[in-house]
Image 1 (cartoon, rainbow, N blue to C red):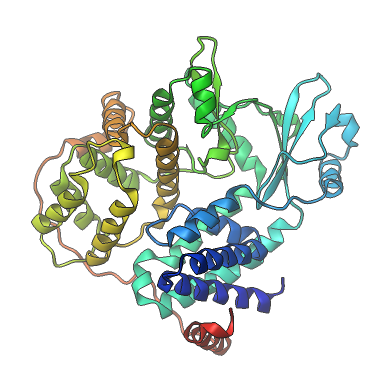
Image 2 (tube, one colour; image 1 turned 90 degrees about the horizontal axis):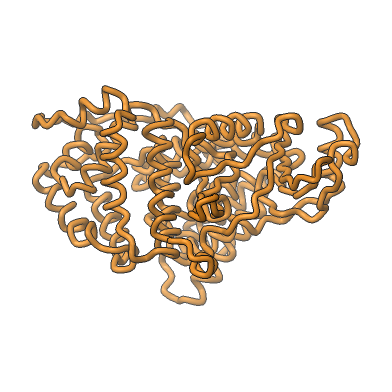
Length: 470
């Protein structure tokens, strides 16, 4: 797809989203959502990756679109095996049959950036081979330039969206993708995570064959586990789903606050469940392409917020947000505390099945708008991961209380001295300080070249006259 077609497709997607939000016809909404998803898939890997991230943002997009975007997680058209064979042989400067006893030509999975095939080693061990798709690096580089351009346009045209920081979101995506397309980074993340969970019998990370791994190919042991959403299978083999969900949430918090390296792509396709020697469930994590760290400053903010929510300390939550300048409001701490109490008090002691997630999100959207809450791009991957775990939990163990597990997990981590001394001191600090908000402008916009101005005019014209481009 050439540049002009991509610009046209992106403007069409924006327009269709606006139509979808205004439409009240169920059939029309579903068809529009399908059109948007099809356009995203045609745009290529960057758009698909962004679509996957947005598939967890039910606070931003209509439900119909969210349901369609979720299909982007797995349904990506594979490339022909001939190309895969050429890549492997070229990268290792050897024939395929000299490296593997057998390789399955039909892919096990096909994602936006890579394709996965199973194989047999010369020792008859079952393997998984992940291969970066050809020309993907050049495509990503070009598409990121385009997305950066459109994020600036969105920032200019839609003032209400500025608090979501579209420019910073694309910057975070850029950073994440540059890491993901070099499989040496994934190999390092796997080795580090294996070391971190070396003595943990609840978690297992597949072994890596470093001799058959480079920047475009990674080779791992094959694990025949159960997909984490297969509730019926868990019941059949008598695995406790409550323990699985508890271990999954503890896994996330341990990675963030103890190891400072977390798996940031925990959708169902990347989590398997197997049994250990004691016949207990083991969480198997695969695909470490997107792993992340959180800076100490954000980690402190995040830990304090999570624990304050879990302990129902709404006043502290209000203070934390004012201090961090993530909200810009004339409301008093007491007023913000009351708003939070109204939303969270009825749900924090409830099981997931008793909580109307849609209603809660609706209330949170209204509150975030009234407080002019700023998006924090550096925490997007954490938010995405947490929402994914919530969705999994709701499916396999709806009777569980996630906030209770959060409180117990965080208190355990803090007690065991796994946070830095700085974080622990801040947790203990109960002094009431009045916080002042300084208005900041994060974007110093440079003069816009004539061609960009022209393209903005085209985009606005399409949005105002959307019927012309449907």
